[in-house]
Image 1 (cartoon, rainbow, N blue to C red):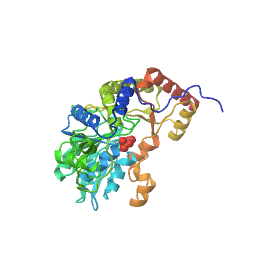
Image 2: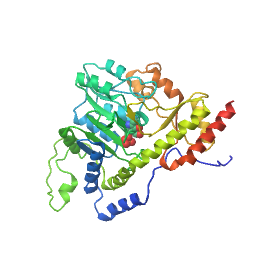
Image 3: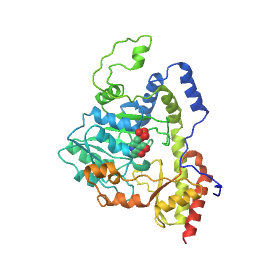
Image 4: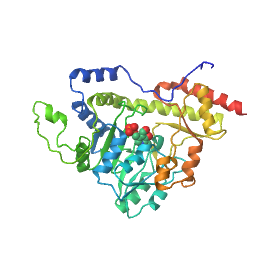
Length: 383
Ligand SMILES: Cc1ncc(COP(=O)(O)O)c(C=O)c1O
């Protein structure tokens, strides 16, 4: 097989000397699990978002799950969300015993269509989870309007959208609570990790208890100088706390986030400029009332079959990906609820064409130009 002249990975975390030093300091300190660094990370992230409370967790999945559990959402109840998302968003609804109710998406942002979500409300609905796809905030005025009317819990899935704004308000304070991801590919990372932000102090308190088995005290309170060995088990919680090793990484990444987001935006603008000239794609949008961030750069491939496009790009040494395979088409959800093709036509039409191009700060302008060069060669072969 011919060796590739270039290889452009789909994603790459930006980890520098400061992250290495911060992690090394925690390792040398002798205290590795949830402790002072986690508390500092929660406080700085809380201030960054402008939320009343922030609770650090092992993942965004855990943040979504804990939020639903803390609100006692469960059996016999329904949660409205989009099928055009990662498995976590709906799986957590299953985990608490409730039913995810999918609604189709908007043609331009690929976010949940609030008008359809409003129609999906029944007497069993308890919550709605709008997902800010690829970093573009959902139409939160429309979501909040029907949610407030029906007393629903609004939980933003902000996995892609740290740093984004909707009508000058930060993602993370647009609903009742929000779940962020610091997974390895995200705009800031702790390797694995997540954060729940929320307005309600009682919800934050319960989330803190639920992340550590339901104990009345965390480990630091038991093992530090003033600590006591006694704790109450107040309920059967989970084990999804963040460690100080992760938090140390997160503190440095949070300081660099604005720069990361600026760089991603600059590279996204360059993609849009160059691909506008190439033609053959529907390009991602930014609505006037938002300041989006760019977790992904998803295009709709209009000039050839999408699967073939991803394969031919891989042969050119460029790794692309697909976000997302709609959940109603996945065997688990299709079988359990009888969903089929045709149920959510916009999500399906987008899925058939969508491909995510590589996007991360260290890709640089040269990287974007190489990706577009590969696209031009693939396109020329079709002509
Ligand atoms: C939309 C969405 N929600 C939730 C998650 C879950 O994030 P985590 O891996 O931190 O649990 C992801 C992960 O990629 C995601 O894309």
